[in-house]
Amino acid sequence: SKSKNKKKKFDFIYVSTYRKFYNEEFFKVYKNVSGSEYIKNEIKLIKIISEFSMKYNKKISILMRFPENHENSINEKNFYSEHLASTKKIGFIFSKNYDLVGKNKTDSKRLLSSYENLYLANVVIGVDSTLLYEALAVGHKVAFFSVRGKKNCLKYRNFAWPYKISNIGFFWNSRLDKKDIYKVLNNLLNITNNNWKNYVKKYSYIMKIDPGNKKLKKLINSIT
Image (cartoon, rainbow, N blue to C red; front, side, top):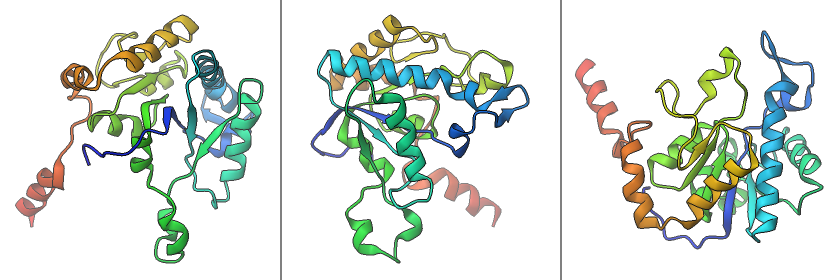
């Protein structure tokens, strides 16, 4: 849905991209990139974002990648608790586990999907999750911080890849600099919804939406 009239509960929601190797220091994500190197800048980033929220009295919560009853959810929660313990109390948002829909309907009804949870925030923040691009496509205010690193194998993690775009923009930044990160967050907090809607139209090419999957259905019908 393009718009939902949900009451905003958070100034920021940070979209987790947690993987099991986040807790495995020597795991090889790529041939020349270890697990610890892959996540080191993200850890610094979430600390800066948390410090910003404390300084300006903003409410932030982390949208977890795994549902609360998933085998990896405890490790995911511990990962963020460990690295943010010195900054502030952390809020966690768990989404619906689609694997359990139909098996445990009572629990499922108490949880929203990842997409629905995004409507609880004024600004959605993250590094390189596909969910961020989907959020941008339907009109959310989204802050992209492409801070994985500069090695060639990590370039496809940069904002808007494979399009060539500036490293710094109104709602994105690839530099792990507190001043730059603060600027992006303030930009999105201060811009009105109407101005944002008009401003972000020029970036609609990054991820297009297709209500009702009309294009996909047309393609399928043309070959069947």
